[in-house]
Length: 323
Ligand code: SF4
Ligand code: SF4
Ligand code: SF4
Figure 1 (cartoon, rainbow, N blue to C red):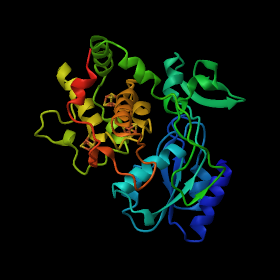
Figure 2 (figure 1 turned 30 degrees about the vertical axis):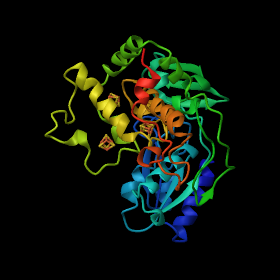
Figure 3 (figure 1 turned 90 degrees about the horizontal axis):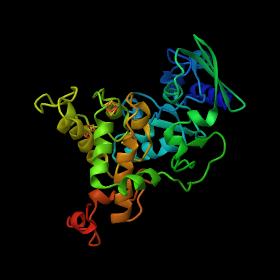
């Protein structure tokens, strides 16, 4: 597929449909494939990569790119197209300035999962018939491909592209996902157990902001957390209240707009399962306002910014009861 993508990108550059291409290139290590913009066929031939590690969702980067001159080609996986659609709905991207080629999704690999198995000093990873052959400075290691699959790919909600100009490969379907199973386990805990769970997880946060910076729903020109007058501007937390403040405020800010793209959990260097917090909001929105998938289309209104007489009342908090 990589060769087809490169070929098509070069054709679209050559015929003037686009003046640059957004895809991925190798990072410092073989496994940290990273977003990149290419302006010539030579650059594409030399650096363009689409491999098992091309996890990054390019949609958020198109907010800035679509403000520049000319049209940019972007390769989007199915999950990325939901983010792109949501950003279009919020008028954050100029659609005319982006040419989208939908490409098949994962499963993609997460190098952090490989490292969490105690494999360090990694210099390269090869997929040999779904066994990962991992070169390290200490020698060769092996592990099954599936064990290193990204959390977001393990509970993928859709292989269908919700927006594109053309596709490479076949389009897929919306899937029966088990993505709310872990949320249900949390719901079945007592409130004390749940509090302890989140206390344990959120206390690991170092406020690196990677989750906020990568999140396609976090595109505010001025973020509350960048306000120097807030007292909580970009700093490590000083107590357990501040620990939760950042995450709870952010979860409320993206509620109804979070497409469950999984990027926040993927980039968290502390492996905090942020997706469980966002999925709880998605699950609650589904049950309180009717099924809703952010980014699935351009027309359906976000239940939290729309009003109907069937909407639940604030008293729902008490009616549901909290143990
Ligand atoms: S909160 Fe996480 S899952 Fe939701 S849109 Fe942002 S990065 Fe994606
Ligand atoms: S945390 Fe809130 S204010 Fe900051 S970028 Fe995200 S949505 Fe905007
Ligand atoms: S990415 Fe992880 S460690 Fe960094 S601010 Fe977000 S939750 Fe905290």
